[in-house]
Length: 288
Image 1 (cartoon, helix red, strand yellow):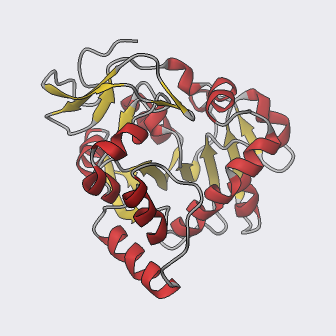
Image 2 (image 1 turned 90 degrees about the horizontal axis):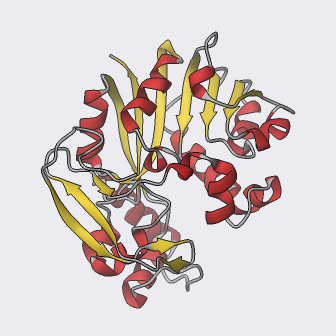
Image 3 (image 1 turned 180 degrees about the vertical axis):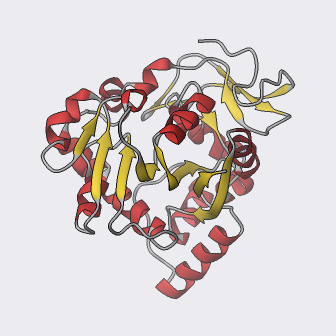
């Protein structure tokens, strides 16, 4: 699906910021890929969108190695629980009706169930039986007609969508009157990008993302979709040792030596998050 103009603001005023191979899982694409920077709303996006990214049966098999429950638990669960524990610092989740989109094996919903929440999950039908053991199941958010939720979580999805505006509006329709919509979104303009430049981009640009957001582009998106920003937080998902190892090796790292103590690591993360130089951003929104 070739994109001729920005899918957020419809502007054709754009510059090419990348024309090279991009990451495809652990490998790189055979062909060069163009990535544009919208001069109007500041989002970055691929020249060609992949519609398959909305299908988790395909997506997780390609990018996670498998789409099974056990793979999700082993590969995704620790990271997902880390996300929700961070988000809890800024919003009360107890005794709420909560929908998580793109929920996979429902790791976050299982965690929230202990807080006396009414929990529901949306994902591909291959996860239905597992989700329905403890939660309400939805296959498609656009087919939810008779239910509205106090809180909707979308923590690993918007960057993969094809039509961002429609996606946000679909979530709005099923949000209760005083409800909150919570996004966790990768932040392109992070410390790694500013310090490593090309050596960060060659690993960050990947076939699994259609969009690359920053604070300005997200502010623009949520203003356009008539959402009110209640809270906006930086969320760096890696510690200071990871950053310095990446800086030294100029490549993605899985294992690295621990040098800094907990106090310095906490100080590092607090500053990165406060200045929104984090690898992700958390937005908590309500309807205007």
